[in-house]
Length: 283
Image (cartoon, rainbow, N blue to C red; front, side, top):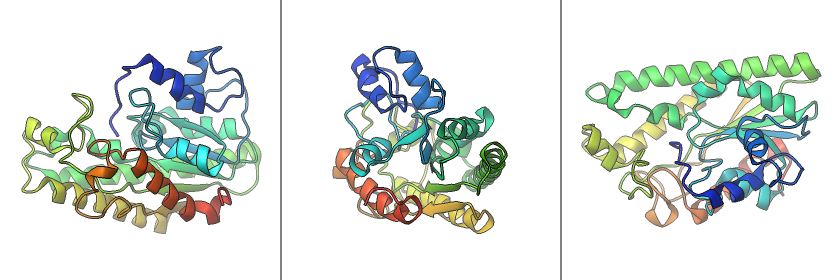
């Protein structure tokens, strides 16, 4: 979920083919990057489905060969997105930058649903703050996530109705699957969610897998609690897709928190089936 470094130029070229514009992708690399990551495109790009997400939807430039949820849904289930997806993106950033409004602007009057892959980076940031104070810090972060999520949905729906009329949007959020903290980081310094990161910063936990799986369960419970308060929000549970608690199986993982191609294939299959009754796309 942490932002992967911009290391491979070829990665940029391959990644950018997922942009929502219809022009020649090689004409203006910068414009395509803005379109994909911030929904700032050259004019409206009508679509029925929007997407705002972190590295579970787009790992960005470091690993172009890994097809995360966004390209899986586009290539295998025929989704046509407008979106703002970028590795390392936090829910806090989305709300602060008003990305929900930009996605709505790009999607137009026919957009019905926005898919969300957010929250993981808000939990993972500044792990050293957890040292000696895990429960308090986690509670504070979860409260902020919940408040930001509700603010994004309420403000987004008010904006959509004001601009285009019609009913409010449906917002679908997933809760990730279990990490595997014992995986080796693929790139040095990108070891979010790894036991090696815990050890390096002095975050001592009795069992890294138990710690991360309990944290992930708590996040999923937070989403369940939020949908009871916000009728426009729909929750998709992706846990136990890649092997189950306390950690996903290594053969399905790229690193500690991201699946590999096979893993994302399973995740996309499950996610597409769960959201089909809402989106009516893919089957």
